[in-house]
Image 1 (spheres, rainbow, N blue to C red):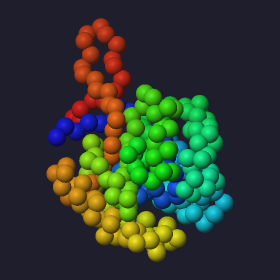
Image 2: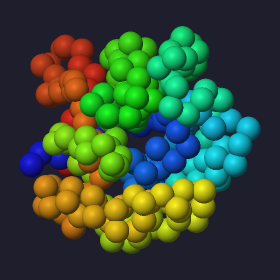
Image 3: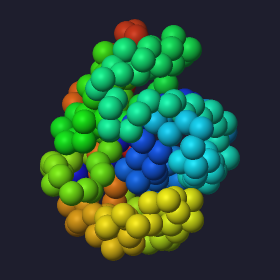
Length: 229
């Protein structure tokens, strides 16, 4: 299995339909990236939950999951479960972010996600970020929509334990959900770890990925990924 590293990581864009989607799908990855790239600029857009307890939870959680980052959080008030009916407003919010700069990495929901809000947001992402590395996270839930991922980020036991602790600490409103528990988060991480020869991992879906090799003398370098050293 080949390991690849981004050639630069100055700006990360996080996208979620609901408060808690991003930390559930990519919380361990955020902890690892923000510690590996101190001061990285992180912008998070969440489509629902503004003005509610959910927004308070999300702001506290994302602050905890992005240690040392230059963090900006935007939470909109689209109705939960009705994002497809508010497509234009969601797309405008995404386009506004697009006009403000070039992220090195975009993390959002996967296009095959069965939840209508997640899927709608996922389908919008490539219309605004056509030439960007985009990781689609997965969220284990009742719909049974998990697909075989294409990218893995191995997590050590301490990082997974920290992720689960932070989810429990910051999302008290979700503790009565049948799927929101330690076994769920640890279970999916263990399965993905087995698939990448690690103990635990978070997994993502990538639709397009540009690779580059050592440039020919005198030619311009090609943007993309390079192997780890």
